[in-house]
Image 1 (cartoon, rainbow, N blue to C red):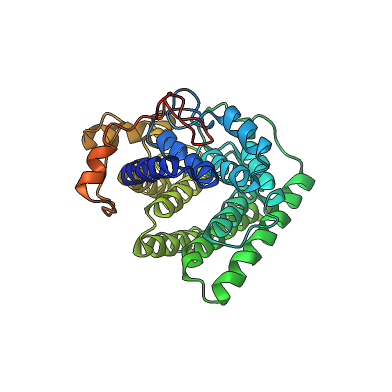
Image 2: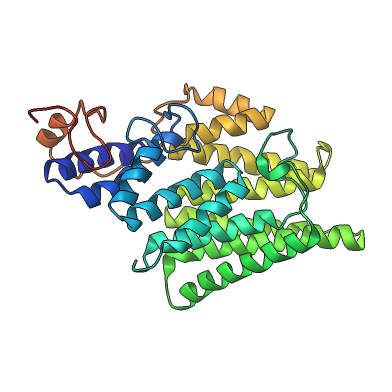
Length: 335
């Protein structure tokens, strides 16, 4: 995420210089999204307000300009944050907003990611069990959904998964890791329900292998964020089925996958997410302490490509967004 932040600041500076208002509005939510994940948000990590932008001002500006692409980008990034921080009801709202704003927008990898995230949201809302066994205040865990609501969410998840299946069948390699994670999630959901209804052991080995396949494909594809997410979802499954029984061998698998997820999130630079997991699981604290990071600015092993010459980097080294508004204009006179 650190290279994303640096590159985004460079590009946004150039967009401002060339008065590219629309491009600026479409790009700035991605920068604030990255800043939120590396734990540099001013207040709430689920709100895109901080160094780069103010969410409410951005929405007012985009609505005034009838910039629906910018609004869709905003909801896309908010969807990603809500999913990562397990606010699934909020995530569903943002997903529906992205679908309502998709008219006139060509299909792209952004569209694919929206469908993937939407499918994960509905799969999460299809589960009768809480997303974690910890005591949290997540809005998605305050009430138990009805069986009818669970069934509706499962059908909605299947609708989105079918779209990903179609893209993979047509040769879109960027969707393969996403599809395998969604398949693993479906298998985990079915296994949990079968175990409760028939009172017999679920095929946990098959579920683990499905998650492991998704993890390996994501890792080989170079998608460290999807690798982290797949590890986390696998961990949540095994920690849920054991319900805190530390003597269960499946609990050990849960700890194993959660540790790998934390390592991936640290490599990605998503320290806000790491801190959330650190708060939820005691065994995560030791791993974070051994890493020796203070939670801000960790670069991990991922290195971004240098797209600018040193002279350009020097010009934007002290870049600050205090003098910019969401339209790309300068708030300082004479510039």
